Amino acid sequence: MKCLVMAALGASLAGLPAAEAPMPYGPVPTTAQLIRQTNEFYGFIHFTVNTFTDKEWGEGDEAEAVFQPENFDPAQIVRVAQEAGMRGLVLTCKHHDGFCLWPSAFTEHSVKHSPWKNGQGDVVRELADACRDGGLRFGVYLSPWDRHDGRYGTPAYLTYYRQQLRELLSNYGPISEVWFDGANGGSGFYGGRREERRIDNRTYYDWPHTWAMVRELQPGAVMFSDVGPGVRWVGNEAGQAGDPCWNVFDPDGQAPGHADSRLLNQGMRHGKEWIPAECDVSIRPGWFYHASEDHAVKTPAQLVDLYYASIGRGASLLLNVPPDRRGQIHAADEEALRGFRHIIDATFAENLARDARVRADSVRGPEKQFAAENLLDGDRETYWAAADTATNTAVEFDFGHPISFNVIRLREYLPLGQRVDTYGLDQWSQGAWVEVAKGSGIGNCRLIRSGWVKTERVKLRLAGPACPALSEFGLFVEPVGK
Ligand code: FUL
Ligand code: CA
Image 1 (cartoon, rainbow, N blue to C red):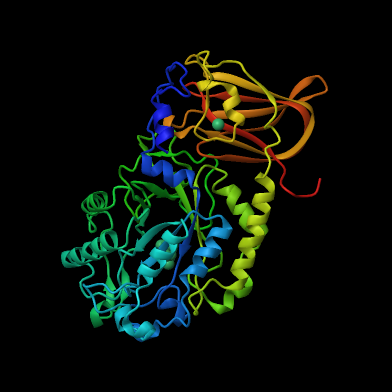
Image 2: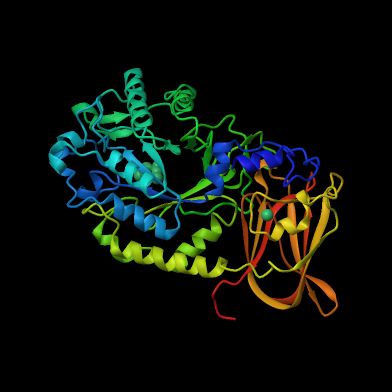
């Protein structure tokens, strides 16, 4: 990732004279955001008392003894995630019911009073360690809404919330993502009072203060909430990014739990900040495991559709895979993920455009640094850039013989911002260019299911407010009937 940043600054490659890289256009990602985005696919782990009470939202009055996984196996969870192609996991360390999956020093409502491992267990520690061993990144979800704690709604609760966050960010190694949920207030146990509590979600949580603490303790972590600041909610829990889904956004006037879902879904072309979207969606109807939903696990084909509707529109995908009462991923979910991975791997195994002769209308400088061939080298850190004046430009790919494809993949070089407004792809057919796809917005990844196209040449057209900087172009075959 350091390389991406260096190349953006115009450093020379392989001893060639440095050419000027294009100026970034609009907001650009931080290094942490770039890593988050280019890793694309993550798993969400919803696990707590609800797994054992068969609920989606615990009331906050659950006995700690309820939490008793038969055979919690973090290595199994990590293995399933790796095989699915996930690059990290985010764990619900505390959901709305307030039960803590780690032995927090600031509450008695945690695993330390559960019979699981005689109160000596720590789910956060075990999963964080397993992730590190398996090369997965690890993130934490700490629900701001707490239906157990009697202080919820008062300033004292915020102190408690930050104490807990400090524990999670100080004692469990590097944290890649901190997930701030937007569900706020309502009825609950609240230390035995059993009442309704309302808060003003625009002011109560004093987010800037909490965000500053995260930055101090885990500078490499990306913060999720409805409105960022690191990644934003995509506006639905169905895994559907807008088309287009711009990486830039203005959070002004919006707050976690208080944001316009249509704007979140599409982003803002001329937004002031780089806050890309993340699609959180469950592999099952609910977020927590329920045996009654074993037959409602999404099929491989549905998961592949989610991939195209999230990652394929430049967002990241946070797919929830809830452990069952054993504390493991159920076989039905594992099988669906395996089928999904098989289709994705089969599709993207070979870029059919890789050996094409490529010719761009405009290339920046004579050096290889910005050459059109960089579009086909399979390396996201190398890119083709046109001259500053070439804001409406095209690249042709000549395969030398007819090829058939049904998926197009485009990637922008993100350190230089989101530069392309519109794209179009033409095929050479009976002596003329014929359009096969068009749209707007590229970003980290744009996937287009074009239907079957058979041709010897294609032309990619791009237009925007600044010259394009694209890192990859690919044509693929999704295994579906011709
Ligand atoms: C929502 C919560 O209310 C759900 O239970 C779940 O955690 C989901 C990811 O976020 O706001
Ligand atoms: Ca490249």
